[in-house]
Length: 146
Image (cartoon, rainbow, N blue to C red):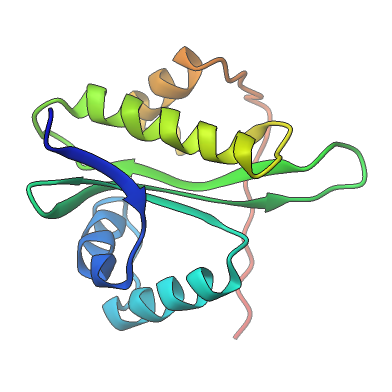
C-alpha cells in the first residue's frame, strides 16, 4: 500500500469521483461534478480529500460545516467512499478516514456527523471502529426543487 496518497481533491479528479458516485447510486452529470469541484475549491470551506493509487482516485471524503443552534460546529460528512473490491480496501478506507478526521480537527470542528445508507455495511463498521455512535431512529428526508 506504499503507493497510496491521500491529498486534497483536484479538478482533474472529476472522472474518477463521478465513477465513485455512480457506484453509490448517484446519477449526476460528469461535467457538473467537474464544476462542483471547482466551486467547492474556490469557496474553501469544505474538506475534500481523495485516496489515490496508481494514478487513479479510488476513494474520497467530503465534509462541510454543520451549524446548529444546539451544538458546537461539527463536520458534516457528506460522502465517504472507497472503491469496492480493491486490494487493501479496509486499510485504504482507514487511512482516508484518519486523514479526514485530522483535517476536521485542524479546521476547528468539535466533532463529526454523517448519514449512511443502511446497506453500506463496510462503512458502518469503519465509522463504529472510529468511535461513532448510531442513532437508528433518525430518518433522512430530501426534497428537490424544480
